[in-house]
Image (tube, rainbow, N blue to C red):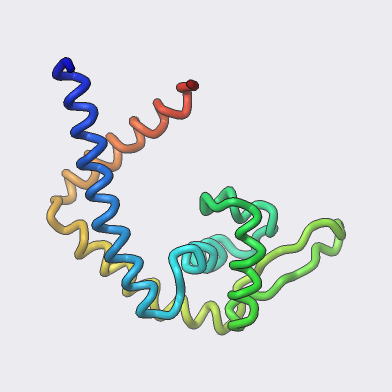
Length: 147
């Protein structure tokens, strides 16, 4: 195996391990606050972007559309979101964060940000900026490939 290929494999392993370590920590944080990562992602989207058509939420948080209904149902039962029918198109239903959902997110989102900052504090600001640019470059180059 040539050195370039070995290096690519090593990069994949290092990125995967870093992602796993951060994910495990954030998942524990979500669990301690009574939500799972997908529920948090939906709440975070609605908290920051406002109401969203149910049909579009899956694509925005990278979740299969079949699972969205289940997650929305759970969040609605807990009083964190409401469904709102579109007045101009009966086929469209929006998910909107409720007052209880807003209160929940205003309490835990700043903690989540602080937690992520602590998890990534091994890198300087400049290193974080480099990592952001490199990961963007890698991600954008891959979407043009097809197998």
